[in-house]
Length: 244
Image (tube, rainbow, N blue to C red):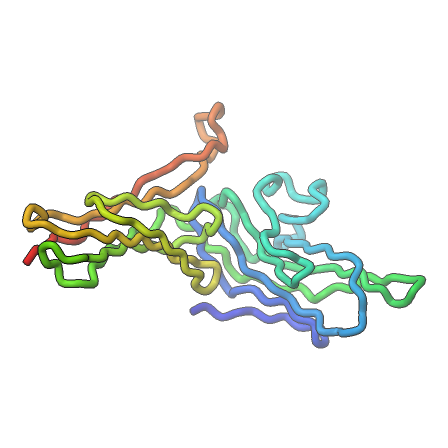
């Protein structure tokens, strides 16, 4: 598990992972939270800002302030009024390297007649690692494969885009269930569970699953379809069914 970065001004903190991995052309969500433990003060305005080391703005609620190369690709996916400052970048580009910084400006009601703007100290995301290829899924079977008895096989893969998780297909028919598990540092685990009853005809046959992942075209020669979603399949054959 990666370390979490905590940046403190008095008792105010903001927390992000030390690094997050994402796949080029897919999306990534950078987890972020902050704390403002000053009871009795009424907050009347919230402005969360993400920017680069050189102060290029990658997210701001005023879209005119966002650097051109990030416009239309960034959004806060959490409720900033509930101390969730998580950032989504979609689609992720190879050039989207960290470190990235976050700060929040709070408009605090001092008394009945005046407000003041207070800023939680900047917190840095040390690295955003942009991968050029998606990880391979893994397949496993828990039970001994016995003819006529229920067998459950699972196909799992990690990803960084909870809004568009991978889709799975199997080479064997059966009942399918999808599970999603949040891991640490912006990673998720997607799992497809296939339940079926093997027959003698399945003996020595491979059991495979295919993972379909959404990407975006990156505007090279095909200008007409620039930015259109593309779905790529990754197939893995890992198991020979040995039916008893």
